[in-house]
Every structure is written in structure tokens, then in C-alpha cells.
Image (cartoon, rainbow, N blue to C red; front, side, top):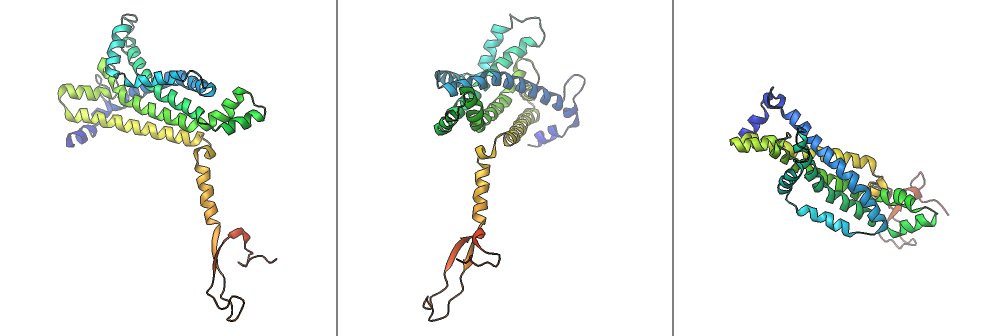
Amino acid sequence: MNDVLLWLNDPQNWTGTRVTPGIVAQATAHLAYTAVALSIAGVIAFPLGLVLGHTGRASWLVSVANGLRALPTVGLLILLYVMVSPLISGRGDAVYLVPTEIALVLLALPAILANTYAGVRNVSPDARDAARGMGMTGRQVLFRVELPNALPLVFSGLRSAALQVIATATIAAYVGLGGLGRYVYDGLASRDFGQMAGGAVLVAALALLVDLALSLLQRATVSRGVSGRFSRRSTRDSRSAAVTVVRPEPPRGGPDGGRSPRQATTPAAALTPSGDHPSG
């Protein structure tokens, strides 16, 4: 553990040298690989999930996409490199970048597609029927009713895909690219435990930061009524609106026969400013 702390506290590891990029540069490259893969996967999976969920047809495509989760990413990267590199040889880092991005896109597709499809399909049929009864077209039902209600699951799939891609983007270093995986592979090759574990810690920290950013984006985008925050707040407000009123003990011999005071839970809005019940 001390080796990890020493490596992380070395300023030269953060700024880098003329030959070796620092942590900031490698983290930026890592984020770039992730952003490109998520963008391509989102462009493919998000519209496809909306269409499949809205129509309810060709749901087998979702099962096929889920089958991609079983593919070993490193083995897939090697296979893609062998297949793609002869086609784009002589184009610099593209020989390594294209196979890496294809592998990461295939990793991100299942989570985004499955969650988008499930989010649309799980919309209440009553909401769909009410929208159609109001005269909405199929496209209006999709974008005004189904999509807003599906956003929580859509964001869940995006966050899951982001975590998987960030963790797996370390394979970029396996084919000679940069990223935080460079520290893991270089540390393993040189038997530098501090560098190897430090790289793993940085990958985990980057994943947590990205997930936090996406959760804040989800909170700002998703309606409070859909996410459940509005209903929880309404429940708390309704509970605080009820007060316990103790009725004074009537005189002995009165209509209550000297029984002990009774307690009643009365809404605060039903009380007069003096605290008594409004008269007849």
C-alpha cells in the first residue's frame, strides 16, 4: 500500500516527461476512448431500443445483443486487430484505435439497448391508451409519454455501460495505445506493484467520477414525478400536516361520564387559528 501512495504522490507521475505522458494526459485519453465508444453505441442502441420497445417487434434483437456480453473483450480485440489492421495499415494509430473502439462499442451496446427497450415496454398501458384517446399519433406517444417515463431505465443502462467501458478501456494499452491502462500493463511488465495498483486505483476513481456526473445529469433531466422524488416529498408533507390534538377532560358527571381524555389526529388545515375545530 505504501508503494501505491508513493507512486500517486510523485508529482512527476502527474505531469509526465517529454517521453512519457503524465496521469492527466493518460486520463484524458482514457476518457476520450470511453466517450467515443459510448457515443457510437448510443447512436446505434438508443433509437433501436425506442423503436423495438414502441412497436414490440423483433425483441429477439435484444437477446442477441445481450449475448455480446459473453464475448471475451481481449480475445475480441485481438481478432479485430488481425482482421482490421490490414485494411487500414499505414494510417498511424488508427490501426490500433479502430479495433479497440469496435470492441468497446460491442461492450456498451447490450446495456443501452436492453434498458432502453425495457424502459419503453414497462410504460403503463393505461398511459398509452389515454394518450391515444387524446388524439396523439404514434410518434407523439413515443416522445411525449413513453420516452419521459423510460428515462430512468435509459440512464441506468447508460451508467452501466459507462462503468463497463471505463473499466475495460485499459485494453487500449494492450495494443500500444495510451490511457490509464498503460500504468497497469507497464507496472505488470516491470513488476512495479505501486505503478500497477496505482493505475487500477485511478481507473476506479475515474469510473466513480463519471458515474457521479451521469447521476447528476439524470437528476436534472428526469422529471421528479417519474423518478419518484415528488411522491416521496408529498408523502412527507402530508405526514407533517397532521397534528395530534388532546381534547380537554370534561367535567365529572358530563356527557362523557368522567372518562379519560381522548386523542384525535386532525389535519392542521381543519383547525381554526385558535387551535379549535371550526364550529357547525
